[in-house]
Image (cartoon, rainbow, N blue to C red):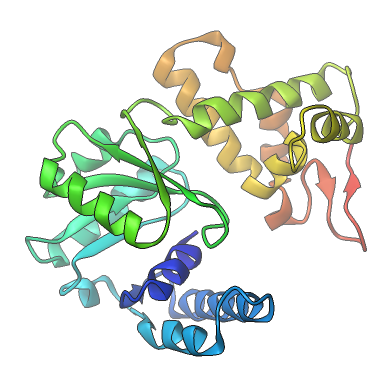
Length: 278
């Protein structure tokens, strides 16, 4: 997600500093951005000059100290609240007082994350969809302390990227994932209860509901650990049994079968083509 966000920001003309857990991860992110920009050139979506210009605007920041002169920081770590809180605690002391801090969380309370920063009034949720260069929507979520000027600045920034904004209230999983993830969870229950196979369920939703990707294939794309985190956030935050994560989803995550990124989830990706695992 971080490399995708950097990609669209640089294409829009913003100077970008990319920070990760190591310099090697930053370099891998830059390589990913370069490859994705090259694909956009080959498909005719952008020109070679735009690709080179975007690459010149992105640099690796080896440490958080290098963020002292930025106007906006977008945290896009794994969907784990403790990880995000740790990053925010370490990041904020290095920022200028006027800098806005945004989180790309897809489910965690903006108000709660803002409370560990030193600037809850200048803190906001900017939730990009994956893959960022392709997906048009961004959810904009303000916490209880977010000031109007922060919201309007974030709105203008997202609009300048050519994205469409959907404003959500600060409730668990916001809008997109509150609707999407329970559907995926129900598809996993359908598999768990033996109603259909992986292939049958995905085929049914692709051809019967005109979804571009079946729900189990989509879960693998998102990452089963992320799916589980969001379902747990919904279940705990709304105290409703309809959001209980399917035991099969829990089992897959415990096995390390996290989807595409682990080469195995509801499909096995280690061969020439994906093969259902159930």
